Length: 318
Image (tube, rainbow, N blue to C red; front, side, top):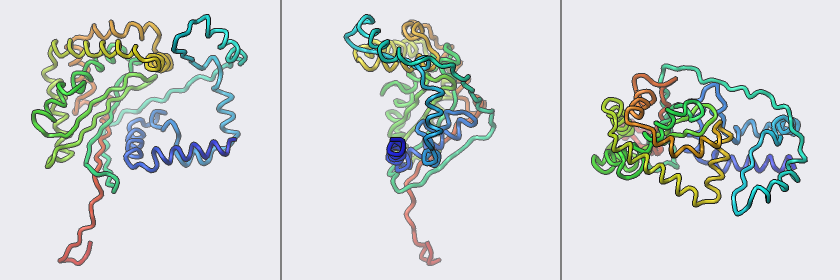
């Protein structure tokens, strides 16, 4: 069983990552950002390590960490506690609890130099820019995380928000642009930015355009109306999420595993409503500055189609 499942994992990595230059590129960007921290390691693992796994290592890991006191089970549907508690006792109740080792958390060391990565590949048909930077998770700093979530919505929460309206609709500098902040993590959160430039606009130019919009928020802030509208959209999304059976279950399970409590989850719509314009400007200054980056500068990625070999007639060489 071990050999066959190991082959399944290697094939899954090959299909999802190794055969996709963009996926490999994103993986390398994340590894570069999260130096000395497990968030730089892909969940599925590196191919050379997967190929070197043996049964003893896997069994030792399983025996160490797989225990009912190290798991969260979320049951969603038309059931009651009285229905499912006997089932949980019948299955998980048979498993013994374990004394779990302390989870050793590394820290990303400060850096002063920006990392710029470039990829040229035949599979890339359109130039694109992306960057990733460190920000606090909700577990690390809940109040700043709430302000970052509102900033996320103001910058990139739809076709009428700042980045899309300015760069795509008004100035036509980009075909698409995206800003996303990941709040749910036990340690560091992250901010991901991506864009596809319009014709005759370079990737460096679109990067500058995005930073100019960041600088606008840093220097001039946002309006209370923008904050109010963003909060309303976020609160609405929390209501709509309840229409799904799987959505709330995933949110609850992931939040519990990354340091939040049930109260944090239930109170999120009220808590997000307390964010004001000054707080949004403060987190923009702290986490989007080009001159004073948080912990380390963002890792920037530039993806290009592979240049065709052009023959130089005068030199008679490619």
